[in-house]
Amino acid sequence: MWKKELLEIQGIHTEIQSYEVNSARKVIILPGNPGIGDFYFEFADQLLQKLNRKASCYIVSYAGFTRKKPTRLYSLQEELEHKIELIRYLQGRWRTKDKFVLVGHSIGAWLALQLFLTFTAKSIEQVFFVFPFFMLSSMKEQKFYENYLLRKPVAKVLMGLYSILRHLPFGMIEKLLGRFYSKASLYSKKVIHDYYFKESHIPASQIYLARTEFNDLASPLDYSLLQKNKCYFQVLYTENDIWFPRQQLLQLQSRVPKLSIGMLRDVAHDFCINTKESGLVAEAIVRRILQANGKKFQKKKE
Image (tube, rainbow, N blue to C red; front, side, top):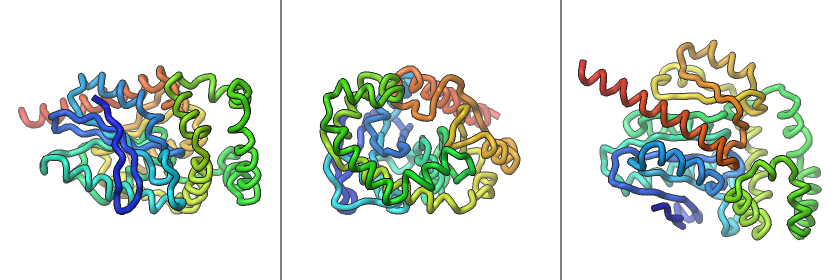
């Protein structure tokens, strides 16, 4: 049974959703930005269903993205440090030999890559980079975020508009949110309501984290790390993704030959808010988990 846990990790209020069974297989899900774990519940539950619920699963909310207002804002590096300590805490609940699968979406994929450096193959079974945000690109949509939306004067105006928006009648809010809201499942609509309209601190955390993302991801991607450990890595991409555009995909394929890369059609970057799209991503991941296990079993037989 799923349960929501409220933890203190090195003094930081932390929310996770956990499903624990007596299994050596553990799956940890790292959200994109906004780092609200509840958005990934439908995805995680479908993933478990496809694994016949023979795995433990943990959906991790970010430090600045809980229902309880944080005492301050957290940078990308601070979010990474928080995830390291949280995983160490979870490992204390497991058997020593247990390994885990990391599933990182968008900026969560960047975090997953950094976490691999900390925990290495001794602890990690596989890492899935789902529609990853690994590095900056020259795409005009990304530049619009970097050059306009995330600048402090613009962000201040956006926060002012948000403070007005959250007090409007909900029917009007639905119309203003347009396509994003219309594709969201009933569950995701409740998450939006709970985190954005019952609470008011999430947008500030979202903007601050995004600002630090654009600073940290200006550094080149470590292709040698990917090349050296590519047997542990799986990349999923989708068409027309501004955070993992085609030119970055081609560059990745060129620099890391034979890296496992799969394309999903009819799935958007924000798949986690839609039940059908969550199921398609879950199916792709489970298929690759089982394929990897089949190869390991075959090697043991040989």
